Length: 157
Image 1: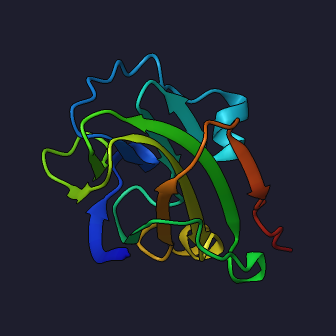
Image 2: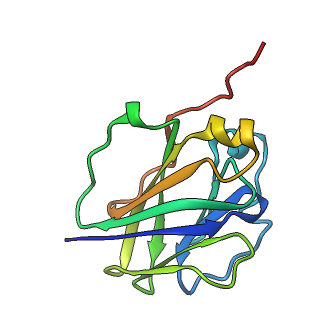
């Protein structure tokens, strides 16, 4: 079974959140440092913070699956994976400092979250709104966060 939604979210502070719907987040717990900024991913308790290219509205596609979805790294600029616990059975995807978001009902337990980033160079060149994100969620055993593909800005002459 797959559940999918497309929407535009406001990525305030260059950030999107994927979390258990009942998580109470301490901003200091998931703040970005040099490593997490380069990874575009910070991990907290029951929350992931995804670093975006834009500080503004971005397109986000969210998919919740029962199994790990396939991945073609050549389609993406940057790809990360990490795990979160979802004790409430509801995943919330939202922009930083937002009062609304997208709720996905899943079975309670541990989930793996993959974030695929596209058109990051467009956000560098044009400022905002050119980058977009695919967030995939599926049940999995706990495992360390990892960067599957790393993006770095293209140098202009």
